[in-house]
Picture 1 (tube, rainbow, N blue to C red):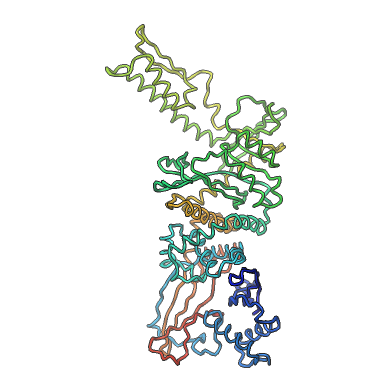
Picture 2 (spheres, rainbow, N blue to C red; picture 1 turned 45 degrees about the vertical axis):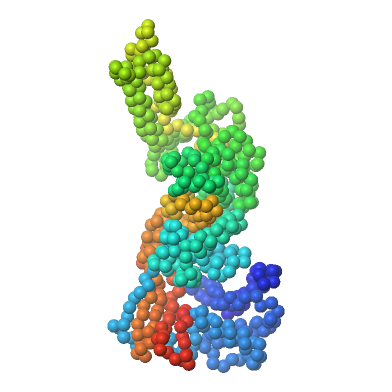
Length: 631
């Protein structure tokens, strides 16, 4: 074992000082060298010299190995002796090392089989996957370097993992942690301290460092997976609130993507890379239009991306691709690729090109063709999709039927005694129908016949001969500032935007980001930020699994993970001592496959052993209530 030193803020002195930890190295089941903290020593100031610390770590190493005599004469130094005994006892008490002279902790026991009981069975597999992903991202070290206490770090890790495995309110999460999950046994946080209020406060504390945390995770994922951020995806979604939210600044009525126009909304903007990792996020008022958010995003984008993003390609959807936004992107040094906001009417087929036919993953045909416009120098691509034809045909058929149904009501009114028959009111009624179906009415010629008293006698309609709606079905246009001569490359780059749509689905469905029940705006922001942190962890796992051709959904990964349990088994030995052993069950083949693909360890620990003492023990008797890690 050895001392590891960090620079941390010391509240007692108000300065950055050296913070010491006692650490040991070990090899895991895969023969990889790992490190674990045995004891947080604290701020030593000038109490001990470097030479004394060196002697102490060597003595502690020998004592932990079971040495009965110490080879260091300096052990008789009262200062060194005091620290050795204090820290050794603390490590034994905390269960970090095993007391070698304790006979009752031998590996072999004579057991009364009738006394064997299994209890406190908890889910552990999904939690252990998530915790290893957070350690892979260095989340614990990041929080520790910002002066968070060990307990605060443990609670934050517990909460992020819980959000991914069991997304629920803080009240339900607290109950789940206490009754169902083994997460506290993995993070080390005292399960008896878990309350909904502590979870609320932890989420708020995490949100207080949002900018630094997002920036760190953005760059950390780039380093871990060698990502260059040459393509950036930007899109928005909204989620709704349950409740009136009377005093909220953020919650506003707007156009709901979930069709919940009866509920107030909040807008979430995400910048992600094609690998699905979040580069930047922002939260806006619920009535914010998509096209007004790009400038704010661009100003902060370079902070959270690698240097290669300085000339990145920004992929956006039609709702954001206004002429002003595209001009702004060009001025700030970004290329763009988007869908045009409306279908182009005037264009020419690029000379020397022909229709290129490709097929997507579902074997659906897609036709690509280069076109040109005289008003700018951008590259345009006409796309015609069979799948989109079927979709738009279905929508058009439904709207045409509704439009004609409304016109038929006008006709039926003419034959009713109290129906609307006057020419002006009939035209007014038809005008309202056209306003209701603007994309459909353009295909119809409607004729109204009235007598000399301006009483309508007949209303007829027919589809215009020069309007063929089928010719426009399934067609849309891509536009980019890049000089691309390959139609398929342009189309494939645009389809990376499906990744941000997948991100939104994961956030809303798998991580249950909707609806929001919080009353205060600060709690709402913390709730959304916690979901984004959980998503980054989830994507870290799924990205690595996808590289190994494992494409399970997150819900399926959690289901598989829940097959591995944390179990406490108790029994009595020949000395009538009750011994409890806490072990993680053997991983089933499916979760073992996930561990191997991720290069994660199978177990958080092999065994933890307790001796449960009776209340009648005398004070003079040796107490062994500590939790011991077996090797």
